[in-house]
Image (cartoon, rainbow over all chains, first blue to last red; front, side, top):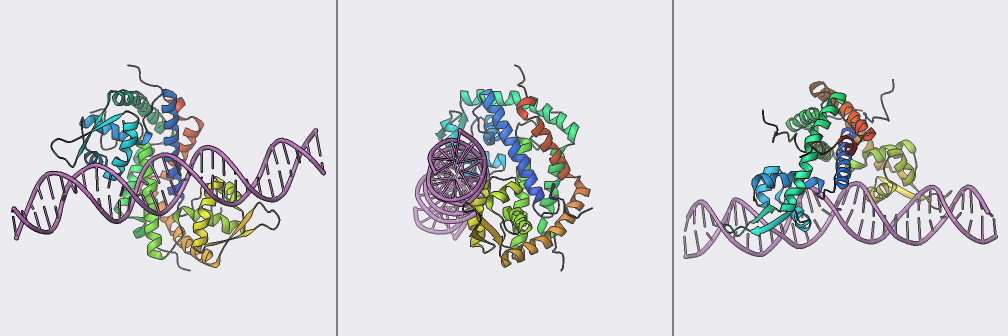
Amino acid sequence: MPATDASTGLDDISFLGRLSEALSQMIEDQTRDLFDAAGIVVPVKSCSLLTALRQAGEASPAQLARTLGQSHQLVIQKCPALVRLGLVTQRPDPADARRKLLRLTDKGGAQLAMVDAYSEDITGVYKRLFEETGDVHAMILKTLQALKARPLRERAAPTPG
Amino acid sequence: MPATDASTGLDDISFLGRLSEALSQMIEDQTRDLFDAAGIVVPVKSCSLLTALRQAGEASPAQLARTLGQSHQLVIQKCPALVRLGLVTQRPDPADARRKLLRLTDKGGAQLAMVDAYSEDITGVYKRLFEETGDVHAMILKTLQALKARPLRERAAPTPG
DNA sequence: TATACAATATATTGCGCAATATATTGTATA
DNA sequence: TATACAATATATTGCGCAATATATTGTATA
């Protein structure tokens, strides 16, 4: 049995990174396909932002960023597109001139409701998928936690020679 | 028991995409840290390209792209940085004027050898990690295949109401 | 009150990738 | 041979994200 395996690339330092990126990309692309077919214009990577905004009612980019665990710069960068799509409106915070307050529009709410309709089914889809293939979700979570607790740099030492 | 779970976000259509992207990003960042500490200048996302190039001896961007399953445009976009880092040289193919032939430099070979020294250990690191947390690698592969065979768009239908 | 600092929004720049278009060169076919 | 097509390299543009810097406004403190 050879030590290397070209099909899986298990001997390569970055094989797991490539795989998880491939999964991420495939899910994003397939979700985009699904949304297009359903007439949903929500940017796939803004679903969680819009959901958090609906939950909050009205919130500033910085508040949303804290909720989502993202940088506030990233949230702010997403805003113009969401406004242009008519999903979100902005107004200055009357109580604090540093802030802008974001709010879902009616269209934004309707679009998010369509996403939710699919989300409920997607939960079932993933559950059935996990019964086939195992619970990737839980396993990735555990891997993330393990790597966060002890990063590769601490785990790895070069093989002498 | 609530239907939603903010900590895992299992009710969201994009939770698995976000998770796998987080894993991919963490691995890339931690690998970059490892390389920096070891004085390795290889771009993390060019490891597989350089490995394929060493295997081939000399190859054109399009050939490498086919080997790696990437677009030839992406390989070509990576080349200037690899040349600038002194890892790779280019020369016109004497047998076919359309092609450029890439070859690892001595520095490129030495750098890749350093990567390999870590890679061998990383294989063990991942194996120990998988014993802790389960074989994420195999599970992501299975999930990728399942989604490729039957994409989300076919699996999902909106919940009526 | 004055001054330093914190919080916020934002512009700018750079990176990596995808998509598209194009120019060049080789190959197959009428 | 002439013409269409394939293969290749490459430029251009756009997207999403990260990093950095900056201007504005609020808050705490001397």
